Length: 288
Image 1 (cartoon, rainbow, N blue to C red):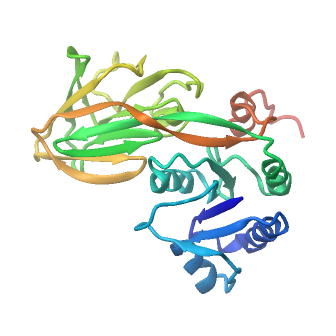
Image 2 (image 1 turned 180 degrees about the horizontal axis):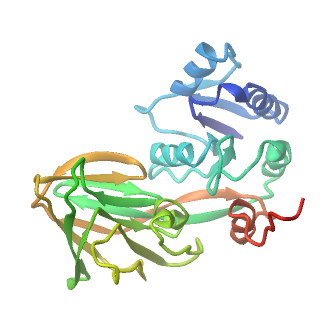
């Protein structure tokens, strides 16, 4: 099994967990490759230089059977962006906080890797958003957010669905989220939670000027066209947290990408179990 490890560079207190991960992979006789930036972090900050088969750079294609994302959901999103269209399944090992995508806890590492070595796991196909702007193509697993810049003025986002005019959002921004991203930024602006198997997207306005504007769930077959007006002639587009400044005037097209992200899941891990655990549904704080 050829395994690539990608990790967060903000986990200096997780040295024992990371060492345990490498030791388990060696015990399973995996061929271990490590992302160059993560290996530099291990060597410089943790003074740990595990023996590896090779280092992974952005310039070369990734020939892996499995990618391990060690960190939180942000690390998972960056790993998915690195893999892009290479169809490599990703396992998220959680050393962060909430962890919807990176849902394997430190206590589950050994058992999960044992199961994977015996080919006992399942793969969930997660849909991506495809953004087209001019000649540029970009992809997002969680969401695409259109946002105002550092000004108190709102922006106006003219929105069409399959060519039909929907509305002009006057707001601080608009989040277009996948089912995977429904528990991320979209949830924080009162968007609904959508099961990963749903073939849908959700449009969630950020601080809309009108109180009767609400999140809207649409089929993921619909093409979304957006045009932005702003008083300072610029605005932000953020794809899974990676933001850039854009000028008004150019139309944005958002739709479903032709490729997916493959997420490795244990057979006993379900989305609804994750909701109960991460969001503490049904928990009674009065019980000790």
